[in-house]
Length: 281
DNA sequence: AATGCAAACAACCGCGCGCGC
DNA sequence: CGCGCGCGCGGTTGTTTGCAT
Image 1 (cartoon, chains in turn cyan, orange, purple):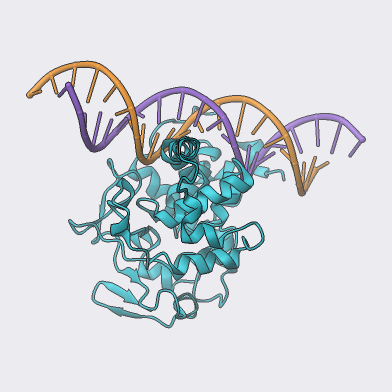
Image 2 (cartoon, rainbow, N blue to C red):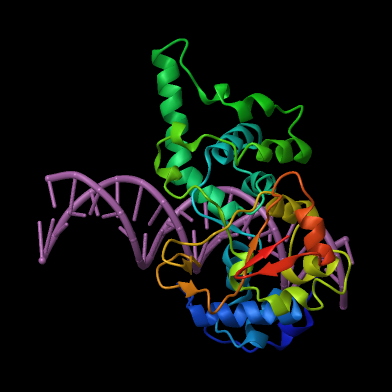
């Protein structure tokens, strides 16, 4: 897997720490135009003083299209808990079953919240014999090692939008609508451009954006939700200094027929309408 | 209002694997 | 076949944010 450019790359000091919006722009624009190809050459070609590894991480975790933002839903947490019980700390495997979530995000959520939740559950079980555990949750009932294929997850995700959030007055419900970064920065021109429209299949996107599989994006689109912030802006990155506004990143995607329709297929075939600031499929 | 602490999040680091030479 | 390199993964650390005092 050698990379020709790697031998030519000049030794330079790589910047560390948080990414600035400008750096994000550079990376994002470069990958949109050229694809990532060899990661070690990306920072050189994109004019970034980062190493390839850092670029890759930034892309995969924050800039990649289709990422969800916001708190984990209870269903997602249940999936994580179940899969963690099955796979252990195989975050990438767990992430594969949670479209729009990254292994890093899941890992962080596990360490900061779910781990405690599990240990608490363990304690409760120790104290009360018939202790109520998460195994009573609908998703866990459905998810067993026998039926834990991607298909079964897609069915589970169907119930995401239906879950009664008021039943779970938890921190994670503060912002229970996952956001889709895709439309936040990908302009309509880019939608209508060669990457998507001329292909008739998703393969070019796969190569350009580094998706693992089509099912992943399909899943994302199938339960994507609008992602406006209250103030009319869109969240971006860690929200600290990376807020962007709708005048920069025009129309949002809105999948009216979220779960049962052909949102994704229509999108890929170009059969969508633009109405005001929202793109309907 | 200032300070301290904990939680949440972002990013770095090290290691192992696979591929090309 | 061995070596070097890039990539992906998981663990860990650093930074920021929110809340309590």
